[in-house]
Image 1 (cartoon, helix red, strand yellow):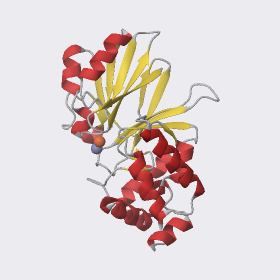
Image 2: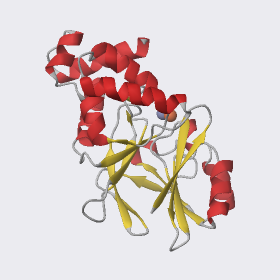
Image 3: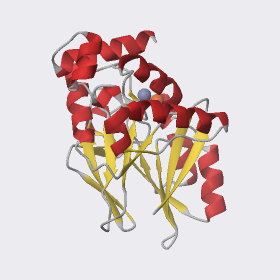
Length: 257
Ligand code: ZN
Ligand code: FE
């Protein structure tokens, strides 16, 4: 499975998962259709699946147009999103699986950004290969999604599930927010040497107008404050001493940043 990253709108990424041997492809969170259609044509491949993480328009906006061109494509989304995702046919729950070529995704229920948000985790097929996590607007490189429909406790539970995946997982999040996220992170975790290094590297990547996605989950565990609510340094920085309150305080501060 080849993963193609398509930058669209102001800061969204669409991911095209192509299986050249079978000339089939899936797309994750098609905000718009045209760049996806162009890529499918250039790759000479057929769209068989649309994998949506949640119902926001910058993640499902291309569904209808893609279905017009590929009427047999199956639209997947979370069970709780019923009625909110255009063309949805499959209503996924935690533990469900979705296959593409020789890879299979485990569905993780990760509410918080929305009440229905799901993530797709493709475990490696062989040892020493990376896994691939498509997490929409739940976990970002250096940050996490805003809480529109969920509580801090829900988001901590959701991020805990993602944090439990192997360090050698590639995090394919849906937005290029990394630089701003890391600038905020340094304000609450100023003595974290790995974070300082990451911010410097990210600054030069963005100076070259290159993408910071995917990142490694191992790096996120070391540098992303929204996976570090149980670190004493972060709890001290926000004046809290439990995970959910620390997370809630960090999220509130980030909303104002
Ligand atoms: Zn969203
Ligand atoms: Fe989004």
